[in-house]
Image (cartoon, rainbow, N blue to C red; front, side, top):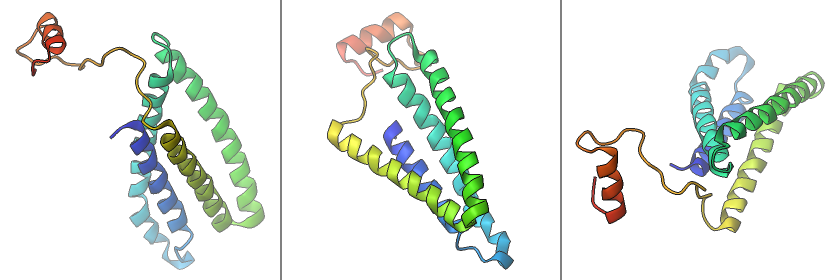
Length: 154
């Protein structure tokens, strides 16, 4: 999966989980355990996706800086989201809060989908070639580079 698909999976898992919370009867709180595994899916897919997006969008050599900027933006977003969520829950209740945040995620998912369609393809890496983290055991770096340039199978 690419970062776009991972982000879509994360959004769908989040939306399903938080909307599901709103249908759990107050006397059946244990039912939340059926939805909680979706938190792991949301977290893993969203984190992996945003790291890859940031790395692909950063100029060569600035990948770490893009991760720092991303962390700052996420921190500000968390502060705003927690403050707004607390106010909405106190004022309008948990159902409205969870469903409202699900709508925010849905809007983000729609924007991602439309941007992908308008762009025509996924964001390509600006780096010239992707090399594996670990070379096949029977190859040296020189052999691998030579095989890649001639189209040989590794």
